[in-house]
Image 1 (cartoon, rainbow, N blue to C red):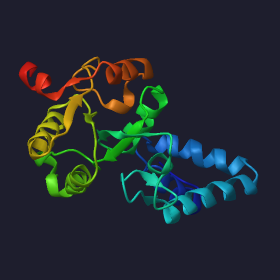
Image 2 (image 1 turned 180 degrees about the horizontal axis):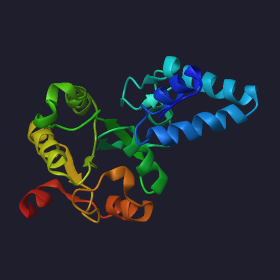
Image 3 (image 1 turned 180 degrees about the vertical axis):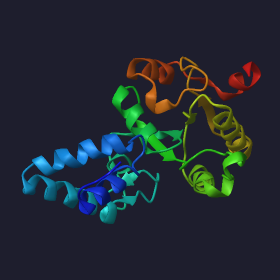
Length: 206
């Protein structure tokens, strides 16, 4: 791809590094920005810069937040006895969009995947164990994607939880095997949460 402007080329190269965006799409976006008022472009770059520099992880659930304790953890309306374990913040957003869950979350920050060099110590599993040890939860819900790596992660955490008297469940398999949670439609995901089953039952079926 030949560029008549080095500045345009640099912009396209940077935009093209974003997931799912090729150079042709990056070029369209760059040219679109060029047609917009300068103030619009400055607002966009300012928002991205502020996000990158200011966003932090909630000190309790590891969700993204603007303050040390996120809105979900700080809310007095949430059921503090329910804890939903998810892979990342996109899953929190997906579940929240269903309107079918009113408990707390714990974001692992990934799943166990030896092929990708991700082990238990790379996740927030230790923090989860401390949370279960120090707080009284009536139920811990595994809400990871329907993949082999996610099942491995679920089972690993389940074994660690055996020393604590906490009920464990997993979302119903209305979600096709191999699908990521964030791409599941809200109705199916919502029903899967409501129809969750004891985790022991999911082991016997697998």
